[in-house]
Length: 211
Image (cartoon, rainbow, N blue to C red):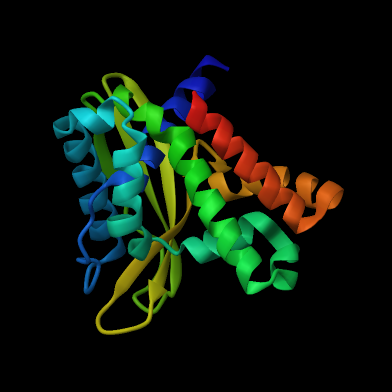
């Protein structure tokens, strides 16, 4: 159990980093391994150099998410997967509100983990697949001294010029982030409907903001 808790701790660190890293649009024409390697290294270097993020400055995190990160994540797909079948019945307004509340939840939930970044290094494993694949998994290992945590990324190839990639799910030691929230969201939807889920997320975000 200790190892699992440690794994989720480092998973939270990397997830937080993905949500605050000031990426630039350089995913074009990159191999998926190179994309993940670059992102991971820039993640760790950026956090180490930014005391505000390491101190959990949520306002700074939110601004960076809005201006730099969201264009590089397939966040609509992440939210749709977390909401499950009910997403197809959601109105455009409900979909927009769900994405915004889910983004806020992830950002606020994991921003505190930024302070835990230390001397981690990242090793990217060779990708199993072909150049024609539109979706694939890139596996990595996060190393911190003698501790090793497996981190996997689900990528989707985006249309347009070159080969652009976006991340739409993250695995920490065998547990996929979106799948974890899918279970929680399904319980809320079954009990209260989509508007009930939106209300619950909003209240949770407000509570997190007061902490």
